[in-house]
Length: 167
Image (cartoon, rainbow, N blue to C red; front, side, top):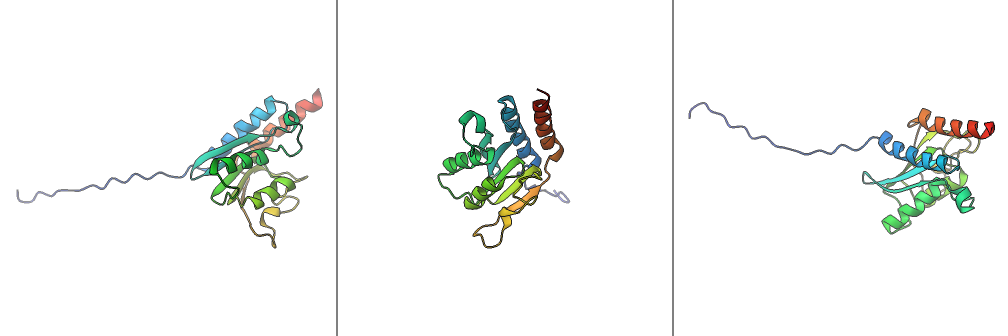
């Protein structure tokens, strides 16, 4: 057949990475669990290779443990999932800026990136009061992304404390 052309199409399957908002929404679901348990509503998830490997919410009151912050519990679960305390290829999403204790743990576990929703102007250690996550002199620095779903994250906390003041 003269003049007939054949076309070969290359089919490539490309999986786009999920946006930060996707993972922050899961952290918000965790914060709602804390809210329902009358805990300060902060939630966290750890992501590795595009998948959530750990989820947690504040459980300070339930466990009677001042260190049972969402970030700390999520890090422990992630370490178990990975089988190592080093989380160098993991990202942590948390609804509120980490405190000094949690920021220290994030540096020690060598988390790659910390993504938070709303700032903590009183005790934030990821840029508001101090920046432990990128402090010179430490052996690791985390990338920081702030303000992801900021309004939604702040609203959960504001509602929780407003209701607490009213009762």
